[in-house]
Every structure is written in structure tokens, then in C-alpha cells.
Image 1 (cartoon, helix red, strand yellow):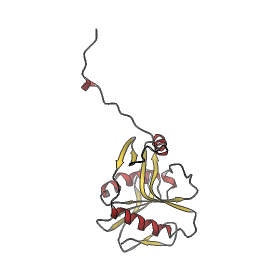
Image 2 (cartoon, rainbow, N blue to C red; image 1 turned 180 degrees about the horizontal axis):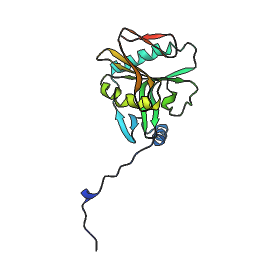
Image 3 (cartoon, rainbow, N blue to C red; image 1 turned 45 degrees about the horizontal axis):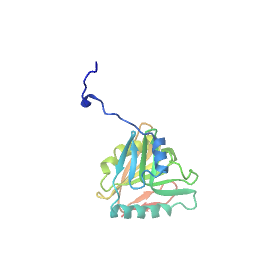
Image 4 (spheres, rainbow, N blue to C red; image 1 turned 180 degrees about the vertical axis):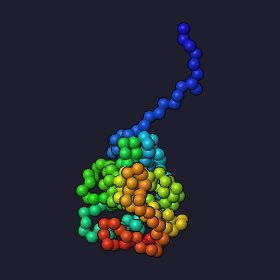
Length: 187
């Protein structure tokens, strides 16, 4: 005889995507109309950028690009970065060696600098993203806090997440660029 049951007694199924799944979806255009990250196996929709964010992003990209001085480096905006097997983050700006494969998601260890422009995301960028980028081996991580007019500059990633070296630079003061003797100044 069949026993009655209630649908509420069933556990909700949970499916975790992998970084490889995310990369396949990315290549197939699954995120053509949205920005997304993979965090712990879950797809997370990201906010579209506002004009101030885009302007600060473009200004910093131009300044950073000018510091390459013939070095075989590349720069990208909204670059997907593999953190681990269940997480892929998207950096507002990333600098990496030109030798990386053009159609693959790079690992954090291949990223020389990741930058987040934090108009409304300071807590996340200085919390979970800072831990993820450090754990993945991103060499340098900057968080541009537009509201406070400061840049959090992190270096020397820790295997368990985060960074050993941390400093705060005010807008208008120079920030040393790790691959050259050059500086950039945000205002």
C-alpha cells in the first residue's frame, strides 16, 4: 500500500556548477545579456555598472596600460578569473601576461593585478572577494572606494585567503605599479 507524503517533506535539490561548467556556459554565450560570477558552485548575478563606475574604470585602464613600457602584458575589463573548482570571479580590471590563452578563463595565479571599482560593493570587495583573490594567488589586488576617495592596495597573497601586505592610499597620492617603476594617481 502506498504511503501518503507531503511535497514539503522533500528536500530542495541543490545543484552546484563547477568552474569548468561556468567556462563552457561563458563560451556558449549563456551570459550574453547579464554579468555573472560563480561563487561556491552558485551563479550570482552582478549589477550593471553606473556611469561613474565606468568612467573611473576607463581612466584607470588607460593609466595602467601606459605603464606597460613594451612588456608583454595585457589588460582586460570584466575578466573572469578562476578561483577554484567551484568559483569564478569577474574583476573590473585585470592585468596579466600576454602569453595566456585568449579563449580560456585564467587562474588567479596568472593575474598580476585585479582591481574592483567599489561604488556600492565595498563590503563584498574587501570581504569575500579579497579572500578569494588571495586564496587564488592574484599577486596584487586593489579596491577603489570611490565614496571614501581611497584605494585599498593589497599584495603578497596568503594561501588561506587574503593578503599579507595592505595599505590605504588617498585619491591624489601615488600608487606604485608592481611591474614597473611607474605610478598611477586616482582623483
